[in-house]
Image (cartoon, rainbow, N blue to C red; front, top):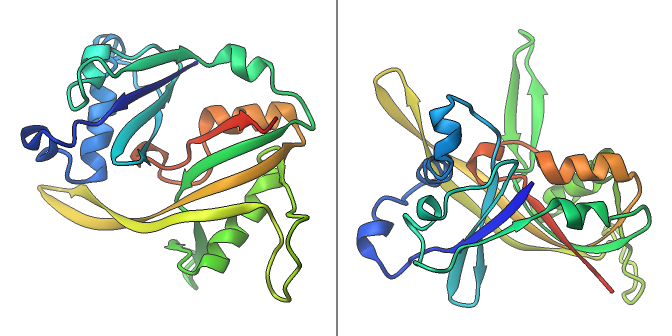
Length: 225
């Protein structure tokens, strides 16, 4: 596995005019793997956009090494970093305390009377927090409780925050036209404890939640100590 990062060239208007919705970022990521394209392969690439200070970065997790030239198509020349991720994941053990960042699409399903299932976004902060709390054990980790703050009735006491909540535009092609939708995008940051190593490593590699092709689901972690 490879974890790659490139600074997005936000000062280049010619480049930015192409990056107007999630589908454009998806295409950028896909075109950064010319070897896969040549082999007619379609491997899953997890990605997200992080903002650090006044800069934006594209992060990509992939089984194959991406092309530096491809990543810098909309990135700042010379800012691409590509690191092998397997050695880091090999060091992760049960009970490790890790600081995490996750950008996800928290949703819930409703089955209609005709047995058709519809997907809706969670819209409140509490709903979005509960979504992650429920996802934790299924993905091999437990959320660390915050021992330094009092428990308030009706609120959880887990040591994580929602750092951003927004709706991102995406254009889906329907027949010969394009249909605009807006996907709920929520960023989580906090502390977790690894409870099931195999399941957790799978979650890191395959993502959490829906819309993984469009910048959701990528969780990155670093040791807390």
